[in-house]
Image (tube, rainbow, N blue to C red; front, side, top):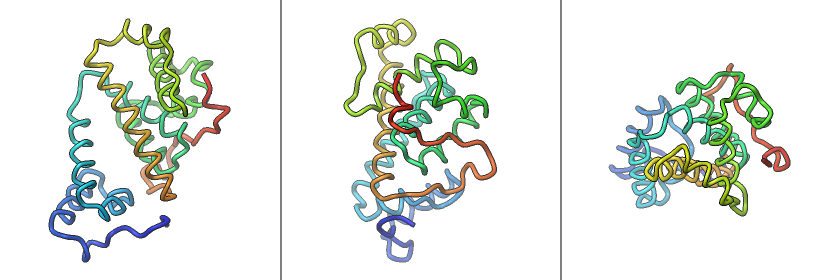
Length: 193
C-alpha cells in the first residue's frame, strides 16, 4: 500500500490508459510508480519518454549498468527498486553471489576490478551530497569514453530519482524477485566506499 492511491484505470484518460497498457506489457504487471505518476499526466508522459530514451542506449555493457542501478537502489534504500533492479540484474547475467555481495563490493571476489569501479561510482553518485572525486572520475575516464560516461551516469542518477520518488510514497516490493535472491537496502554506514 502506498501513501496515496494511484489513478485507477477506469478514472484515467485515454493516454494514461495507453501508458498503463504499455507498462504492463513491458513489466508483466501493473506497478505503483506508474499509477502514482498518473496523477500528473504530463509528468508521466515526460518520465516515460525519459525511461524509453534511457533504455535505447547500449554503449555500456548491460551487466555494468544493472550492477550500478541495483547498487544505487540499495543505497537510496528503496525496497521496490531493489526488487525490480534485482530482477533486471539477474536478466543481465548478475549472479546471486554478486547480489548478495553488493553491500561489501570492495572486499568481494565476486566482482572484477571494473565492476568494483562502477559500483564505487554508483556509491559516489548516490550519496547525499554526491561525492565524485577527481581521482574516481579520472579512473572512470580510463575505461569509458564521454558518451559511455553520460550513459552510465544517467542510469545511476535515474535510479536515484526513481528510488527517491518511490520511497517518498512508501512503495513496497511488487514481487519481481519473489522466491529469488534480492539485493537488500543498505544502511548508510554500509554504503561508504
